[in-house]
Length: 429
Ligand code: PSV
Ligand code: MN
Image 1 (cartoon, rainbow, N blue to C red):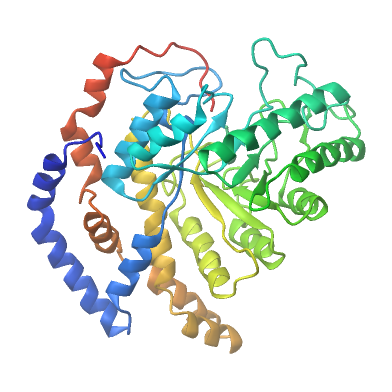
Image 2 (tube, rainbow, N blue to C red; image 1 turned 135 degrees about the vertical axis):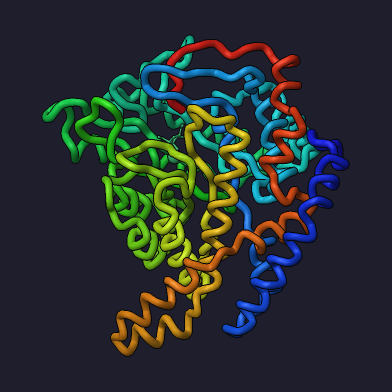
């Protein structure tokens, strides 16, 4: 397997940082041992954790108004895969890519699967796109897709989703993520009940087309710019739809798709309780669907989400296997650096939540000892787990400091020589 960054460069950098890392790891190991925690066991859990990257996240996003491309940005799925391979080679936490169609359309998906495998990558959920019109498309999605009044438009959206499943089968994926931009811009524009009925009817045709081992992940989102309502606006609409569609339908929580300050960790617990927690799109948010880098604004919320996930892992319901994915827009950073940093932030929250003394937490909850219950979480949250995550990464062949090695590799500058420039334009992804 030929990976994009020189193995010697990684080894060189790691040789410089190894002594300090070993020292920090040993010190943290002694600290954890005093609480009866085996650092090696936590490291093994961290080594087994992974999160997928979105193919579209490899390019620069933008605001509604502008995108500021960088030289060397990928312009097609092949170049995106190469960038995703860099992220995984250095960070070792992102071995799968989630593609979006038709953005990532090619003529030979078996070859694409092999191309990814040669870079050490597999495939995560396939994403359909019925929120944009494509050149030459017969029916416009301007008034909706799966919920459109026009039957031919709904059929076109169903067919597109089924085509995505067929592509996913060739890639080796087992999840279809469906986010529709359907909704209304004005009060009275559509009937809330009838538009949901139409969505459910169309979505049930997609559900029926899923292979046995596949899931359909319904992604809710409360608004888009200029929106008054959206059809699958919140986790309530999402779980009701998933319950009606059937066992393969689950809910996907994109952290940015909620009103400000909504208690997302509680939503996670609720969805799990009813066996409908399907997956996540990780990102961070200050005001709305800002698509900021994971952990950059509210790392404590991310920790609390993982705390619920680890509770759920200890009390699994049939089929509990949430898919973890990053979904963010990198407007002013190099996307490779943002995804390295985000995967690190997500993994750290997973590691911290793994350190929670669950017996102490549950005992305090049973005894109504609020402060001790809170302290059980606090103790884990305040531990700096960076040495565990770094050590696991290095043992898997990654870099102690992935961003430093990435910069030293001059990868982007090399790509700027090879790749054709990306044009200007609005850049929401
Ligand atoms: C919608 O905002 C969304 O979060 C969905 O996951 C889409 O597939 C993705 O963003 C497109 O950028
Ligand atoms: Mn999303």
